[in-house]
Length: 245
Image (cartoon, rainbow, N blue to C red; front, side):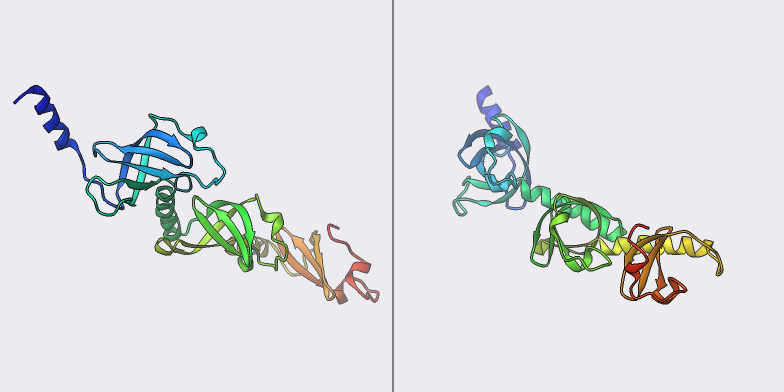
């Protein structure tokens, strides 16, 4: 057997099968309009990665992101031409990143860890948050108080708790309210352990209502009822106090 034949047989032995769901090493062969042509290392097959399967930026120019010869890992989605042997494959980088993100988020969920995310947009009923993958923060779980305007949160980075996660359904529900309440309980325990009935303390007016004023004392709100604001009759707290005082 010739040396060339031996080299060919060795190359065949090194080739790996490619199946949907595999994570493979690919090399960029060419960049066309809207897709990246890649070859799978040690597999002898080629395929494509569409723009949406490489980046979440729908307006991105792929030529600015990759160049021929670049190598990276990708998830095998499916064959493009049915089940024909050596048929062209579709690959995804974004879904691989999502899978990796879900693995980490699942561990954070099980351990009860908080995660950090950036609010990317508002939708009906809540906020969309990027935590390595797309998560949903319901309006009712943004704060321990009612939030009517969601727009000021867009672009902000927030610490969040995971309340529900299901990778198979791409379902990820987040909560900031849980953290707020945990911090509030910790602050309350600390302040309560230092206060004694009859103490005179200093606080700042945090908000006013018709029935009284809420005063921030060491990170905890305490209520001064309207009847306790002054010896004189008070029609409404705002006649005597103002927020920040």
